[in-house]
Length: 463
Image 1 (cartoon, helix red, strand yellow):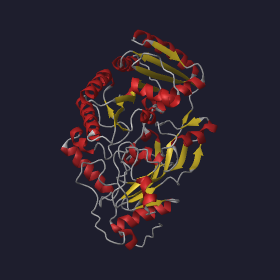
Image 2 (cartoon, one colour):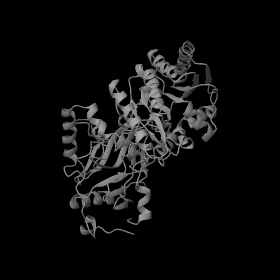
Image 3 (cartoon, rainbow, N blue to C red):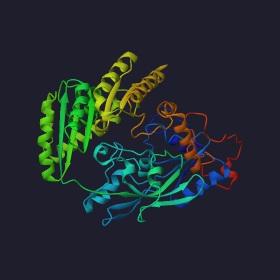
Image 4 (tube, rainbow, N blue to C red):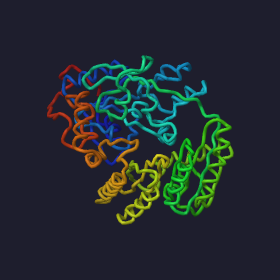
């Protein structure tokens, strides 16, 4: 596709503050079409960007100007569910939540659960090593990928892991989180887990955000390992209440969501332990979900928070940094102080169990300088995370948004190793260039007039 109206939906991803127009979009219907497109791009030195549902929040799937977008949404089949090995083979465009739906009849589920799981694709989850609310107990996408078929940027087709014996380098682990700089995943074999027998979901209200952060440290220090621990602050609560009519304790500046899950006997013992830990803290209101419906209502409010903030602000940046859990309360207090000093509103929603902050920095892009002020606050938060011994990303990736901060987190030798590793998979630097690494090491120049280089190579475009 090359028409302006056809290209417009692909100009941006979930980070709408940035956009670029590709030369063309290829809607792949078979993996053979993906392989042929990558090989044609390699032959013509044309950059390409793989894209699923475009839910990336770091600008990771924004196209390269003049390049090609390879859209994978039509490759959405769940090819096989193997109950004996507890695995599923899925195409890269398969929707995250549908994997669990397909496995549910066998008493299994796919553990990684990003907030966008109703629309995000497994290929994107793999590219950015997505997590989700339950990553505290079950880990990230990389912990659940056991096999992979992909086409590298060189055009080489590779197959790693799967049913073969486990030996040699962990190629699947290396490919996870590459942000599209190595090539394009075609089919993914994922590990499935038994569905928990029971859940125990608690929502606790706190007078201050710092108290809620300190409560997270107390829960982990007690020896408990919940399936999920989440925090939402007052602005996020306001947005979720308006969007999905979620109900929260009045007068609280933050709520803590803690979910225990597992065998009935284990959860029964842990719930008493959790009650004691929360009682010893500064919770002013503790509510326990008494039914599956009440549990789903709690999670509906949490998972709607990102989109719901759109009710409070026409534009916002979702940041994604990590701090050590023991410093979570301090980090939240400092974010509040930086936001006030900057005159920028900031809502907080995050995976508190692993210290993964998600400040939602609000601005109005119609106001002169508003985006720049929001970006400045985002940068301060990232530098705070580095200073505390954390990371500039937990699950959203570096993308276009955070690439300039990468050298502040890694040494020159470490950066050099990353560049060499990327070059081993993509020596021509055509796979999603100008992402992750600081500007200056990107795509080949596209100074074409008339026919696009791919058309010269024999590829036909539909208008």
